[in-house]
Amino acid sequence: MKFEPGEDIVVDFDGVHVPGEVIRQSNGWVMATVDLDPEIEWTLGARLHRRSTVCVPETRVSHAEQKVE
Figure 1: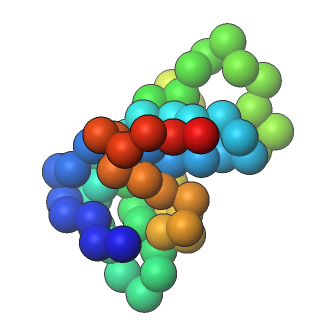
Figure 2 (figure 1 turned 180 degrees about the vertical axis):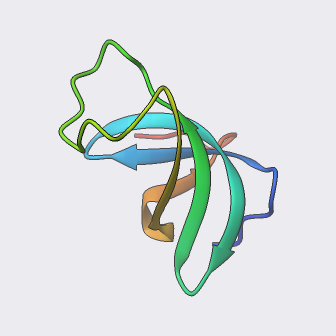
């Protein structure tokens, strides 16, 4: 799937769907800025902030207008 810089996306973090924005895509990975819900206890580590930059496999990213199941 192709993602463009600035595009709104949804990232799947172990079943939790998080909105974000693409920074870039390369070699099967998407770098994005995501808005994390502070009410969720993240098992990903304390280094994540409310607005974090992450790099995730493109298989865990979908276009924001697509329905996420």
